[in-house]
Image (cartoon, rainbow, N blue to C red; front, side, top):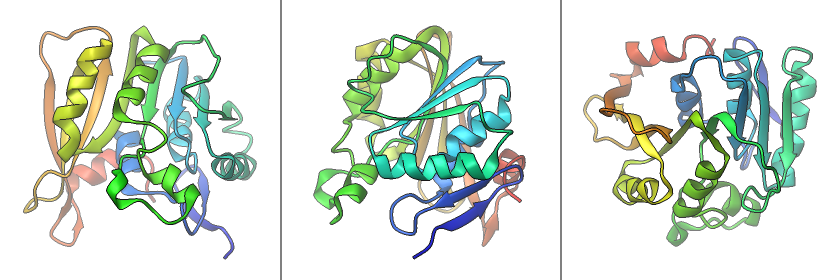
Length: 234
């Protein structure tokens, strides 16, 4: 099947019918991520490139690198660069395993919507398995990579399932990452928390800012979700 399109206010994302698709987790994280004038940005796990494009819209003067282990993902991302030039030409997509990437650069902002499904629900397709499951990067490996590439004054942003947050937060401590802010996300006001968004730093804050968000209110997007994503969604 031909590629599909997902149109945002300032860019278009080509997406693959099978694996590489825009999802609410990614858009929510990109809209929530906040920093003051970062000059260098790293996205870990490009997928369709949507987070890189969101960061480019938010921070048009930043240099943005987005890295993914899958050639199929980078191919789609390059297609998206062509579809959105020249305004997004400052994004560079790199096909590489972040765990063995030889770069010594550190970044002002790191953002990632990492694969987090556990091995007991593995997908049939190998590409799908790497893109969606934690086989290619475990929680501890993700934390170590972020600690390596985040500069001393920078911030990292990620979204993970609520069910993994206790174990994940232990890994933060081991590599010297501190929770600066966390947002507890519910599908709607009547359901339990299912995602947690993190803002991480190498500097320990005096206190952790904690917020909550419901994606839906009834059958519609909640007011807070609309306000948060309003700069991106049509």
